[in-house]
Image (cartoon, rainbow over all chains, first blue to last red; front, side, top):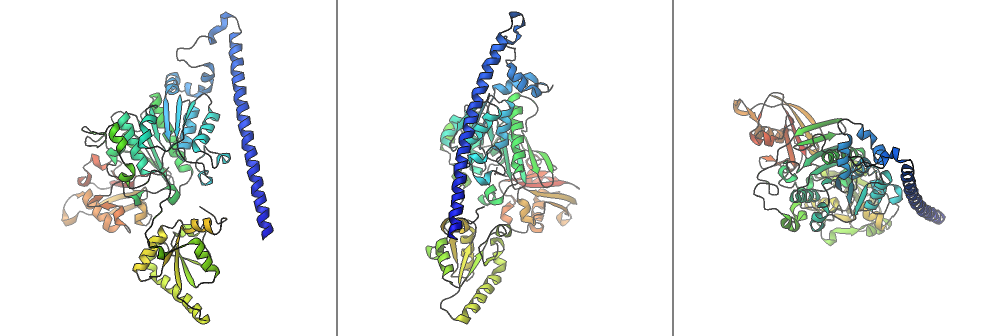
Length: 468
Length: 99
């Protein structure tokens, strides 16, 4: 047993060493590549100057301002009759800010870099995690644990080194949003929570910037353009924030990786259309994507509301009001995606994961109730736990009573002391508290929750226990 | 009156995870017309299986739910007073925030 532990820690160590060596190599390669590009660039310029004055067409700048390299790089855009040189030139002069370098932001940023947006800003305060990789395709494994903005900027640069990438490694707040947004023509909302969405929309209204807004959860996505050409803002559509229980998050509800990918691509498309003044941006309309049914429908939504608190006719919402607005209070949810940590119970109704493991080892007679949804239970569960999801707990109390009786019966035969204990566990320790509360009200007065849930178990008892 | 009702953005979870419902709803008291207000209360008592507060607040939908009658925001057709006709398609969709 001990030797296996030593062996696995040796392997882990070696992996770390190799990874670090690899990222050093990556850095050296990319630095050399960039040196080589510079050299080639000078060389090409040199060659273009070499011939006699009679063939000096390359010296003169074309009226559209595209260099020979640009003409070649963007040739497939230039060949499109409905896009062409004019649209590409506008795109090259545009500046676009993408808020969030996650599932939506990944493809949006990659396409915006590739297509030649003049200046591309990235806002995010998060670091890359292993459980991001299935959908946040701009990041690579070498960047796990490092800033998402740095990682995204490196990828964008490697796709198109002629685009100016601006890194904003900070959380977007009312205190910095105006300053950051004011440097860009178009804003792309690729965030993942309600308060950010209100804040970004309001800031766009205050500064008069068009907003390309996308969202995706589970197997569905939504897309629209706000505050464009007299169209509605986010608040025109949603003047009152939804209840927090209606705000599903990818980290709770799950998301099929390609779904935000599709919406992020469409966000890039809308930003390109606005920047290049081509086509009809998705303003006053909303695109709804259903991945399971393979269906995209575009619906007509209301126009700008004259009564809108932010963009309406008599609105007094200006920069000063924006900076003082409390978006977390307004939506009753946090701007950062840090998971909720409820505290519903008295200390005597709770035990730590460590203490539970001690009691387990001492052979204490108990029932362990796991109140996570069934599909969570299937991913991983503690031994001998009984799965009764919180949503169906009310109707299945009898099962809990029965399990306790059975345990009592077992105990009776070897007549040790004390009652059978009832412990409740979930993923993070929130639902278990709700369940304990409900159980106590129904007469299971000794019910206790395991603080921090299975995540607590992984932290305090078994570091190898799978996180999800 | 034959109608197609669709639930999305998570609202389908309130009706046994079924997204599309082909239903027959008749105006009450023999009144000739059915309006959205009538349909909402019909949906609430016939289709919503759990947490009705996730669907409605007061006599209308809760904040964050878009209602589309034939692919058009009901704000443009009179909200609760929107008249319904045979074979209309009504979509209830919860706005998404994730990404």
